[in-house]
Length: 179
View 1 (tube, rainbow, N blue to C red):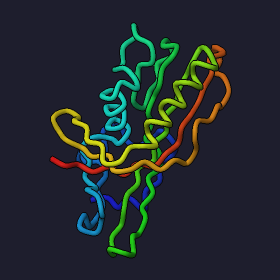
View 2 (view 1 turned 90 degrees about the vertical axis):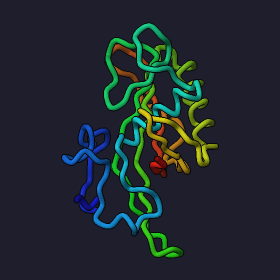
View 3 (view 1 turned 45 degrees about the vertical axis):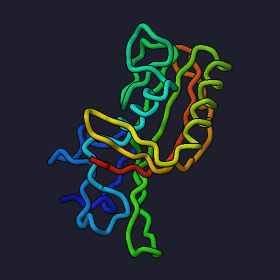
View 4 (view 1 turned 120 degrees about the horizontal axis):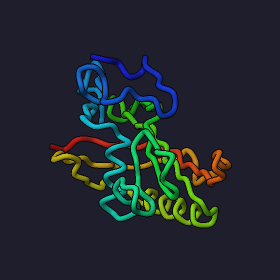
């Protein structure tokens, strides 16, 4: 078993595929958490599936506009998005004497046109800001995204070496496994 509050991962560097035992993440005492701390898939993957299911982004494919990737954004795709796991936050909830894990997420966008990237980013911010108990099936398992809190709205962070516009949205996501 692993205790999350002693592990810090840099942005975009959660261990690939979860911890060595295959679960995502594993705290010492699951009864002390207000949401299910055992996720079989990375939170970034779960969020990407919700964005695809609700037609905000497309499944990864080189022949479409605005595909979404998880943890690795290929250089060949022009208008695209990538969802990264960042450092989670564990918050004590004194009202129920339990802890809540809020998973850190960064949504990165890359766009040829600044205006188009801004519009796609604002569309994502608007959609994510109203998420309350949304369910999504991921590989025959049901997850519930309870709530999303933003660290930032849409932020333009410059251009890449090919002069494509880069944007990020940083958030915390409360998610649990239902079945």
